[in-house]
Length: 288
Image (cartoon, rainbow, N blue to C red; front, side, top):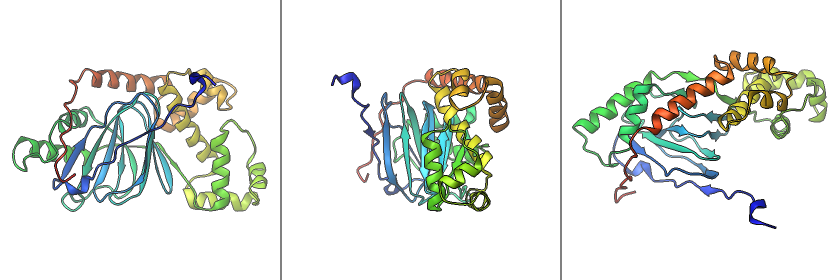
């Protein structure tokens, strides 16, 4: 077998002990990666904002998967076990916020839009040493970042996951082949449930109907592929749509913009981010 046929290696993401840093906000910039990477399930007392500068990141917790496209961020509450994975060229920044010092933080995991001001604050924050002075410009900038965090817009880029084993089998099947066009009744038979019970239980566990959950799955898969430069037409056909217009209508209803506009806005924001000066290496404190 030639090396070109070998699977792309998975690069583990370094996990640092942010709880050992006695600051209300700790900023960290992992190295730019050009291959797939993952951080295995872990948790920390500090809450986390995971911001994608470029590339798409998936963040998974027990009851859902969040997609983090470029110029978006996922908020992970305190002490919540989570794992993350990126593919292709990705660059992300991590900001950890102490819930004991900063009140009124979001209690649920969510995907957040990053305003231009918040983006600039993040770029500046990752240049600070982790033990920055607790009084002075660094502390004031971190306080401003917290104010921006409190008003960030939530984007609906979550795919909720059920806990029932039969429904988990259903979601596994649909994730493995999102183009499958089985009816609800056919899916119910395949997982050993009646259509009525499957519909009721799915609504109870994920808060969505079967059709809405499948559309949300398609949006998440589409954003991942659009971010890699694939065409709307190809994605629409691969996801089982008869033509691109039906897919575009679904996508606009879900995220508020047609696919081409959504990705163009992300690319423009990424280009602006790329013009930002390269951040210096992070100097870890002795206690980390």
